[in-house]
Length: 101
Image 1 (spheres, helix red, strand yellow):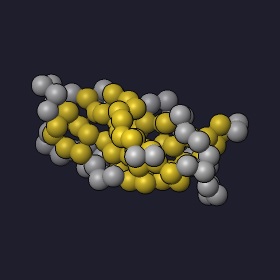
Image 2 (tube, one colour):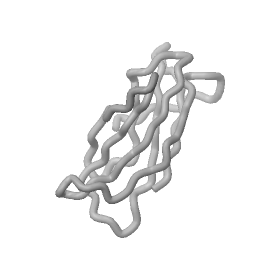
Image 3 (cartoon, helix red, strand yellow):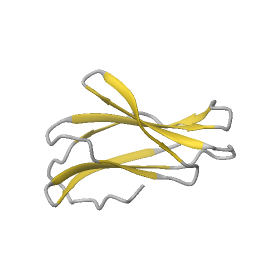
Image 4 (cartoon, one colour):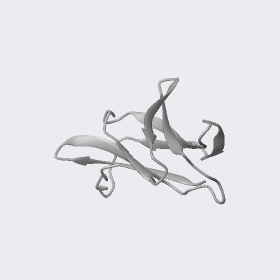
């Protein structure tokens, strides 16, 4: 699985959008999106198997976050995970439109 994350603002509100690839040849029942900030890692979203993006709107300009996505089977076992990707919230760069995922 691959993961990419980028940040931006919309109407003055900061966000981070992460997109991932599905694991090959694996039956996925759900995805968990994990975020680490200030030494604390927690699940910020549990998404259906057809999801490939998530917009995190609970972020602060100037903060740095680390994300990873884990694919789970029906029994709740991990069938794949992305590498951890770090992103600085909302620094200069082209804005990215958050999806409704």
